[in-house]
Amino acid sequence: MIRISFRTGAIAAVLLLVAGTAAAQTLRRVSPERLTGYWFLTNKTIDADVPNTGKNLNQPGCVAVTYMIGSDGKTRNPTIAKVVPEGDLGQVGVSIVKQLVYVKGTQNGTAEPVQTYYVAGFNLPDDPARKASILSQCKLPGYDQTS
Image (cartoon, rainbow, N blue to C red; front, side, top):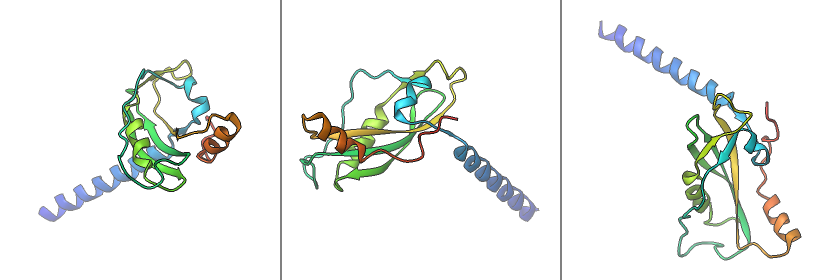
């Protein structure tokens, strides 16, 4: 009897894992430029957790952090996707994303969760062309589709 219960539980766990993985794979991927149709950012301020010391903290650069916006407008699963130049600013980007809160946009009547990313720039130059050049290095592929 114990073997049957264990086997049934194991099968149920595998089915839940597969269903969860399939749901995550079908999540709509939305680029940051198109996000306002689905979700509007409500934060007025953010308190980023910046380290006192670390590699390339004073260099111009950017961080791209991927995350999901849940149906409640809260961010989930922030993951460092890219840091340019390589250094210790990735966790700063994650600390920013963890604080973001959204409300649904006009194209999102059912508050559909989406996958997107956030780019944070650090020590950026005043020159718009140089600034854009640095930030463009953190643009991630695969988020241009919206359906």
